[in-house]
Length: 457
Image (cartoon, rainbow, N blue to C red; front, side):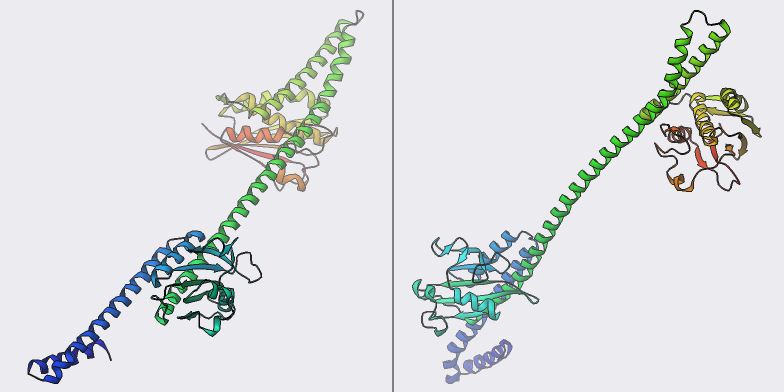
């Protein structure tokens, strides 16, 4: 019968009693007592629901497995007024029973030895195996536990255990008992503990998932640290290799002019050397020194990043002519003809020394690519919107396609026996420091070409 029906009948009974009905008057005390018990039961159930809600809210805010286990057991003991209890987890290192204690309350050290369950092994084993909850109100006489030495030895009166199951995964179990005769567990207590167990299973699953993610994250962090260490080692190795290549190129390139200087210096020490020949040999030595100075400057530019630009307004035609004058003697001896086609001859803003090095580097690559064969080197200028465009073209064998992607990287060389391989890398940085661009020309029928764009002032 519902509470509303009880109230309606009670109202009718009160009405009859007030009308002098002796039978109704005699029934009122019992009906009031029944209603009081119903109200107390409802209040108790309401409080239990509130408690379960509060527990669920607390569990939802926790991720630490130990904290969650501690809260579950503490609340379970209080919820059903149990004397003692423990929680076992199936994923802990298992003994012969297949489970180990994770947290316990009110057990002596003799009863819990090194975390292994010694209480009610048969009961917990049955719950874990069958995945069914168990409750007994008189464990001493319950035939299910006659073989359990712990139930008998420790005078346990009432026992309750529920499995902790998330979806299909068995996570563990909650065990509670009491030796107090006045407080024996009921089916209502079991239902309440099962409701708590459902919330606990969800929280345990999330905590275990979080712990797994933390472990994976630590593994990933360690792997990342190892990867970075390996990367750093590779970078160090590459730097050492680069230094080796650079040193090799420097040694080979320095060897030729140094040999020239040594040989001609010996001639200059002779007293019988004619003045004209002495002057010629001295100029040869000076040229070799200039080569060494240029190579040293190229290395310094690479190491130091080229230094600050010294910008000034420069007539482009005069600047190109200075470069041609610098190159022509060397190119004439190698039968290389220099052509200029200057459509734009106006003023540009340059660091003359650094931009001269760009043109000389590209011209030097053209000279080396021709490898002693006659050829031409052409410098073209034109205006394009607010930029000046320089094209530097030779008619040599061209650039192999396989080195094009890395052409402007340090230490890339092709077509010459020796060299630092820094020229184009330095040239690219100088041009970009000027706010311009440099690229390889495509579609040429023969040879190689570079196009440089620079902003006009």
